[in-house]
Amino acid sequence: MEEIIFPNQIRMYRRLRGRSMQELADHLNVSLSAISKIEKGYRRVDQEQLVRVAEFLDCPLQDLFVNEQNSQEEIVQAWRREQERRNKINEKTGLKTLGAGLRQIRNDKNLTLIEVAESADMTLSVYHRIEMGQREVSDKELKNIAKALQMPLDELKKEIKNLDDKGMLEEIIQRNDAKYKLLSNPRGAIASFGSGSQDNSKISVYGTAGKDGNIIIDFEEEIKKVFRPTQLNNKKDAYAINLCTRRLGSLLPTRSILYVNPQEVVSVGDIAVYYTSEKEAMIVSIREDDHGMLYGIRWNPEEKVELGNNDLQKVHKVVFISL
Image 1 (spheres, rainbow, N blue to C red):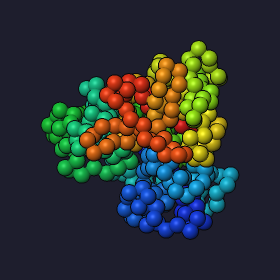
Image 2 (image 1 turned 90 degrees about the horizontal axis):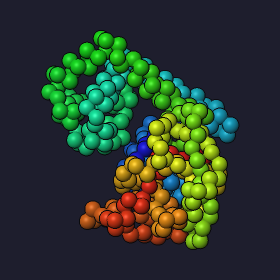
Image 3 (image 1 turned 135 degrees about the vertical axis):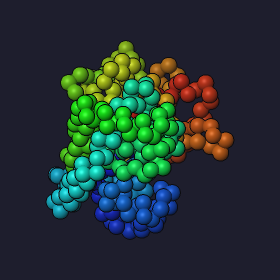
Image 4 (image 1 turned 180 degrees about the vertical axis):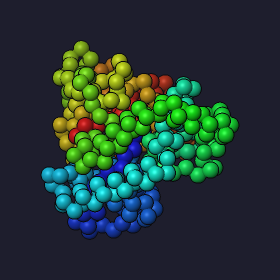
């Protein structure tokens, strides 16, 4: 599940609705401290949490994002100052070099982010931030990462230093910086849930409204083409769909486009496209029951969708949402 840090107007809407921080914390099943950090734009949130916040505050999801057109200038400036401060701290402590080195070694070993995160007993979000050079790492965590990368800790440190001395990490650091700046920009933050920029290649968009909030997806009837997000570069099976359903209520504008990678495995918290037939699908949020079995949830009204083991191949992960 992609997660982001973004400048937001959650606190303003919460106060307008007369709701307390504790009520929002209970709704998201997180601590009061976590809500405070989320409202300040210092804590990461995922796609499903964003949807649930907008649902709780009864406002369109895109209104939660700070942007230069409709937000107070001091909020925008405070966000920028915080990102600049953190960037300087990370440069001084060498976190960018460490993160770039870990990414290079992981790629050399043909390991995925998820594989290393799980082996190191971390969430995907935490490990991703480490590779991005945006989070400090404790000695224990670094030992776990070394083990996940199948290397002694001393050897891992030496290899990262060697890569840095050879100048092999600079390109990775620059790419990470570019990605982080996109997320740190109030103009860019409103554009997407996930991270990444867009290149000049295009991706096909499909989807027309079906019955009961379903979406008809006929791959022989392309609606249009749009710019392809970076994370879908070289993903030949990736596609996009129009959000032509009212089953999300007002949480997302009708012009939203959902970008889908059918090759990625879905996990708890993901938004996904579930095919009920060859050309008909529904948008669901992936959940897990007490027995570890995945199922889907639809909204407006809420509805549980059973997913059998054989159905998981019909579930395509949404990796990016353009508002």
